[in-house]
Length: 342
Length: 298
Image (cartoon, rainbow over all chains, first blue to last red; front, side, top):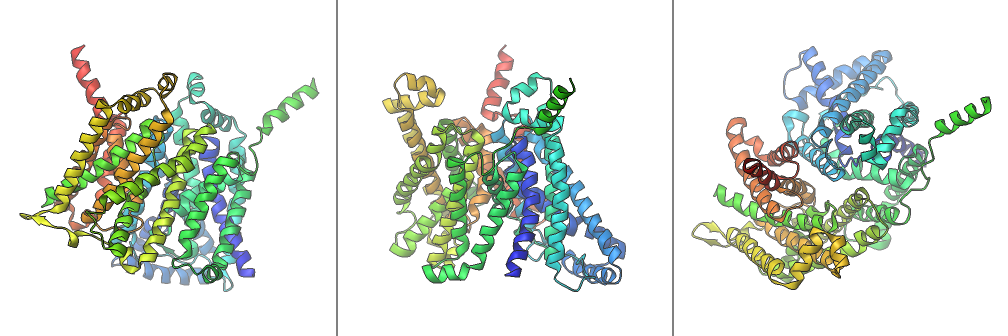
């Protein structure tokens, strides 16, 4: 039971970061980013494939990436076990690099279609995400391919349940990101993004460049999603590209955002909680379901069909989500205070 | 041999992008489930062979009909309720993404029910040969020619074709003229998905199929449609052949430079083509060439 609760908290932390990032991009700015998985994938890849490569070069470890990363893991784990501060600093280094790299990636991938209409945006982002997934999945020299890249345990100094630490870490980061997201959505920039979502021509008529707006918000939200990817890969202590499928990191975040209420951070958190809990319960009672229904196939397929149907039902019967997007509060408050001062 | 494979693949890609374009023109939503519908065709063909012993070439009409009906069901159940509620393009796109996941789930179920052979399968051993040229080459070319001929006849020689073209050009105007736009939409989803099913049933003669194939082939389909111009039927064909041939030949040429590992990454070629197309001619090359040639005449 405790393990189930811990799983729910951990997945809630990770998925909430991703869905808040998607909410900034889709809920606020109206960009249908069907390639959310790309930023998560790159966040995870930054840890294993970029930062660790630098360490490998620094320590002068020879050999293929798969073996040398395992060797690096042993060295770093020992260091972290001796010196917890080194572990924390390493963690911060991983997360900041992931955010920077993914911010850059997010800005670059949206460039070809940033001036085009939304269907082109969605198609291009999905295509880039799928192709990157495939390349990372096959290429052993770039990313370890099927075997993956070993990663050090940044909490090697802690002997207890490391999932607990990762759950707390993801919740702490989620709080920071929530504050950032709320600030963005209540800023003039956030209102501009909302305007772009509602009517692109109006924004253009006011002399704003749609392309610049899209590139900016895509960079910000990809950086956030990248952090989630980095935390997840540090938790599994291994970067394997096949963990970062479109279903898990693009479709499910979309489901959480739409279920909770696009444009509303509180709603998105609620949607994420509902989704994560339901999914965890499905995982726990998987064998019972198979036994009682006597189905000749794996339950994951039923999960796909069920969540696909849930998405469809949300779109038809509850397009605004569980919690509706509330009007921007700051403006209302400022108006009221200026009225009372008069 | 290489060129033959490239042409088979291009034939199938042309069928797929033709279908995608048809539904895009009538419903104005890019169907993200198109790849999965094709893979559904592959698995239908496999099931028909496995359970009933029907050779994949002879089951083509059955797959055509079944996938066509599936297409109509997808439109009526998933898209029509949303369109009636005035959903935006983005919502419709998300709905097709959900449809893709649902279809993927069903494909997985079919695959698990057949057994381990369905996890990864190929039909090349069942193929025939004429003077060293594979049967897939003749069959896929015949299917493309037959499709084009019947589409041309339908669009330009029948009354329904005129209605169809009118509602493609301007649905609101067509509706005021008394044309049943709904009927043309249902028809386009039938044809689109039926063609995707045929292409899917022929695809195992060219490459291995796994349940996840749909999410990779969708990249090639979209590249082909956008390269040719997503709102143009001729463009879909041109794009299909350009992407199909370049995916095979460019990757083959690159393998001399970078080694055979490159052969795995043929989809990178279609992605690059897609990005170049978006930067240079976002309306597609057919439209782009038309404008370019016009710039000389004025």
